[in-house]
Image 1 (cartoon, helix red, strand yellow):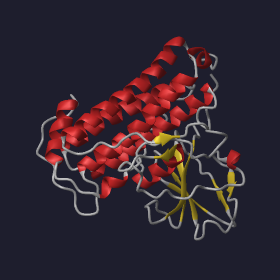
Image 2 (cartoon, one colour):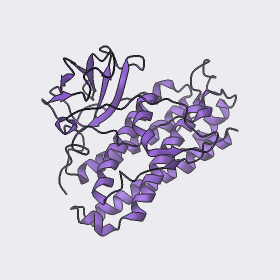
Image 3 (cartoon, rainbow, N blue to C red):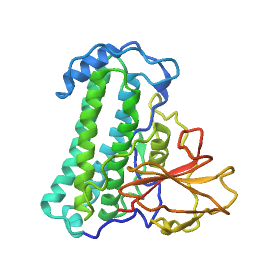
Image 4 (tube, rainbow, N blue to C red):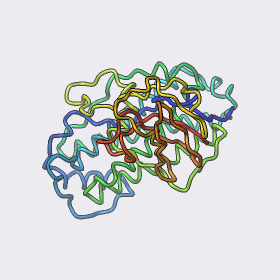
Length: 321
């Protein structure tokens, strides 16, 4: 199978989430200790710990974060379900994958489905209502077996980044252990798909964390609508509009579709495993820096920071290696 160096010839926002937040996440819950106990029982790797404290006002509680994760797992599970219903094993083998690799890829989808059932049990056992699956649109991602594999590679990378970004928000050690046990599996998925794609399985010494709004921006295009109570409350950032997205490779100059938009744009930010890099925007142009590896998230920012208050557009995903 040919090596995948970019997704759709450069920058796209094609990766499903990984963690889109339901509307009811702003509601606080009084069941955090029960959630910790249920997650500990449902996940062998979680160890007993003290009950988690209620999240401060305006922040996500641990049960919120479990539902946050469930939203992501619903999307991932449905993506694989639809893909394998549409494409036969022979379609993937025509790309150069072996029969064993195709079976392993199917196993990735089965694992995501197991994550769904485990999280549902944990949330319901805590006395909270698990979010329901949304209605998704994977048409662009499932035009062929090749596009499915390419999207799966990005999907799993964003999944790792989403769990890493959520980890510091968790209060309970039990919930953190449960999330960590899913994170490590998502990382195995990503390494396997990179190998099957002809790429280096471990492109960098570190992985990259993404905050919820950035992750939701990548996921939003796949979600058509959600049931009441499970609809999305996070506002996505605007998409990055480029004149030459096919040039989104290391050392190339990128041109904004409109040099004046977004207003206040000062930097192209590249959020990568080795640390964030910022290229100044001059007359609507910025350069893709050197020393980028793996999946890299590009954003347009007001300053040399990638906090929500400073991001104007993006992220989009590029794959320099």
